[in-house]
Length: 374
Image (cartoon, rainbow, N blue to C red; front, side, top):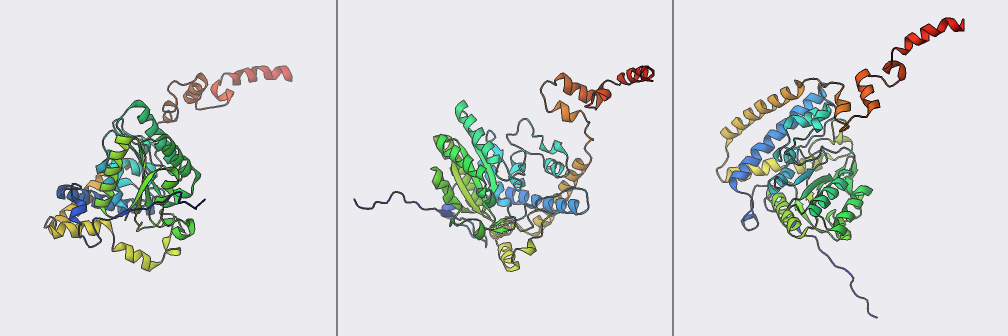
């Protein structure tokens, strides 16, 4: 018997707006309008200032550890491709997308300040809180997509994760589940080249992260993750397919975090300075501005106004986060159970778990009984 080819595949890479702000008009057709590009540039710029302020809040002891989003803002274009009924299941470096999808900006600050109310998602926003454990949230995304399919809803679950998450077992379980049950979930791998301090070359022997989806029967592609047109088009097309066919899709975005992994990290210890400088030239905000300036849609005067407004807006966000009313102890009880069990209600009302604290009258019984033992 002759040897036959059992399987062949190819991975396409999409790029529309290069680092010099030059647009491929053919590929960009029917994607983002100039008005949307301006809006995204303004939004991303505000998010960049938000990042800078959050960093200072952490350094001044007003907030805990914080992961900067700087350099990866283009993922926010996914939110323009999404619909209100779609779900966002994030990791922790997708601020731009989450804010566009409806998350109040102070929520992220509250979360990193240690206030659980930062994870309280408004009822009209389909989103899960940011996920710190690596990869676990992708299982939730697959489950939400399955539920939407069973209910006959026309929604999609978009889930974000870093390249490091592909080394976790949860990633493979979520992918297998989504592929086997054909659920409308779009997996977005933000490949920034580093799983904290582990280089991509040391993490996997795969030539791409996109090809990992093929093992689970999931269509996939790779895009320039600093190119808003490419990210938007890939996410929009993936959504259309997911809704029409109830099938998952995998998108690998090639991007780079310009800051440290978190404020508890020092990337200079493991990243080459030349590598960082080369990626700074590919900054999504820089190429967006070059594009807008080439079309006479942006200038220095508008830039100054934007920066002033961003400072004003972010200052107001910080004020709301730091000025929030202190939570009551009842919160840890009242928002855990729909109906409090009697024992839990007693713990809430007395703030004690031991019987003497819950029934202080027992102390008098002990005092009364003391003489009898004398």
